[in-house]
Image (cartoon, rainbow, N blue to C red):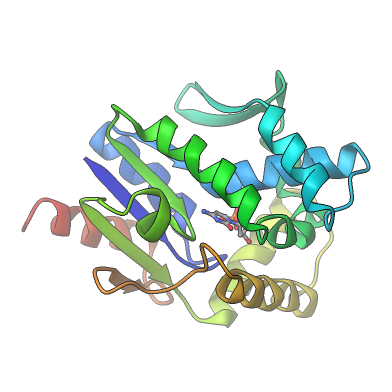
Length: 218
Ligand code: DC
């Protein structure tokens, strides 16, 4: 079974996808983490995030995979655990530019499809239902108000030890929303077969409950 979860930043996708995959015993693939790892490696190697050719070369050779440690998912890139570093504000500010190049997306989509082959998966991102798993059994689109998404993102940043304020966080999310919905390929959108859930006033447990009852046909 394949379950696609798309939606804008801060809609609660990764929390839900992670718990859903545990509940169902499926593999969880966080595709945003893959674009983030590529972006971080580019920044570390002084590759311009506007240089699509150099980014493509990097994307083709870089090893990005997930490892599971006591129920926790780790993003491993070239034998380094980058799970925490890929969430830095610098990466968040640059990742949508890196993800906007169609040739980069082509490489990443192929890798994601390969990861999902022969497995039951929950995969979250922006273009999962449309490009990565167009035949997914379920396509969920999670969303929430900009205020709630900014509040969640701010909380995440602060608990990871970053200094951040509400205005800057909201701005970062709005810029990312714009880039993620307006790019040429793999843009974030609600599909005809998307099941839309607004998580603004729901707890993670409530969202999970809704999704599980849809999947279980209750
Ligand atoms: O899910 P996230 O916020 O960690 O994703 C980071 C960025 O990666 C997001 O702003 C857009 C990009 N992304 C993408 O273009 N396609 C995906 N399938 C997943 C993420």
